[in-house]
Length: 431
Image 1 (cartoon, rainbow, N blue to C red):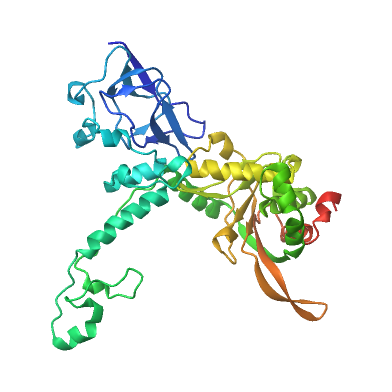
Image 2 (image 1 turned 90 degrees about the vertical axis):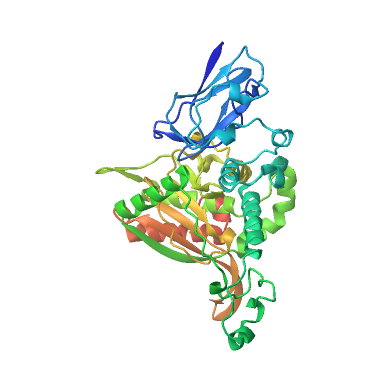
């Protein structure tokens, strides 16, 4: 047997270990060179492990969910063997209780649609057949939302079979209405008496590495930084007018839609240039002023919140910013963000407005010293020149580390962002 090792790829310096998600090949199956064998989850990104050579999967040394380190051997490929009819003849080292997973794949399993890592893990945990799930992602890939919908469908089907508790008296039976044994259970969104159900199910799910890392960093930020938040309101009408006047031509010229985030990024850079301490960071007893503007953009993904970085944002055009943000969003949905995309950053922007948030106090992303929270733009009554008028208002929140940023700089920095958004010409004239 000419065996070739399948190893864990090199991890970044800040990542000590990773977790294996779900093997796409089992012992005895044919493997093509560069075919993805498994995805590995770190606390930052999901890495794909391709086959180093063509052959047959001979041995799996680390099963799904195992913790591994860089360069660790996790499987072996026999480059001289032919696929076996039954994988039982090929030695493998699965974890206890994993023999059923090693069964020969059926034709239906071989034709299973591609699934995102989080979706594949969820379906494996819940025993959902991927072939029964319709993917809505790019290339009909199964997303975590698709997997959750499939799990919810199974749960609803099981709940429909649960018989309600018997009603002890005729009076209570008359009051029970839809809960009587003669009628079906009410819709999920209806107000129901939970005592009608025979069981109170619970589910314990371990945190993903990313979620655990997010939790660790948020607690670290709260513990180590003196976080204070200042607020202001912005009349978004000038930005909306400018966008509406040029959005069609902008899209034809640059191939990307003109959104609002590019204006917020430009306004943030404008303010950071005026007040460099907001763009600084703390290292021990030293204060580091950054002569560049790497802006982190908080993006929701099926695996959790990630913050990819717009590097040298001060040198980027509106089109460059919109294209990069769109690319980050697609990568986050498909689990394709690289470690390089998430490393560094001198300032962050979190846009809760896309989910309808009115106001929030964002938490600083260490080692940065400030973060801008953007919220939903809503028509609100405001006073202008003694008159009450209706304007599209957005509440901005700037959280900052009060150890190094005084209230004066924080307030003036947020005012500079407000003024840039209410008069976008300032961004062109650097005023």
